[in-house]
Length: 135
Image (cartoon, rainbow, N blue to C red; front, side, top):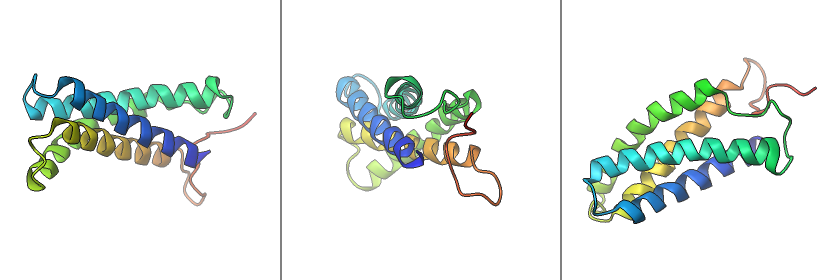
């Protein structure tokens, strides 16, 4: 279950970030684009993960949703992920391609979200898992 959660979050966040870069590239400053791509990437990744694992595919129990606290922290961390994405894009000469900026911002925000989810559901002395308890 942990692998499925992480893969869903990473794929959805990266794709959403790339789409934000593709659709909004050139209409706003790159810094705002990176922040928006990271924020939307992590937020939509939380929503899609909850839909797929909780109801849509029936892969998880009803208590496998991402807690609201983790979603709020991920939204805040996505601002840092967007700034990091823009800095990496500048240093690698990709700062003039908004799709790459959005992709990197979505990817970094998703990585942070995945780390938050695993950390939130890990009890000391136990292996990490993203399902809190089964009934």
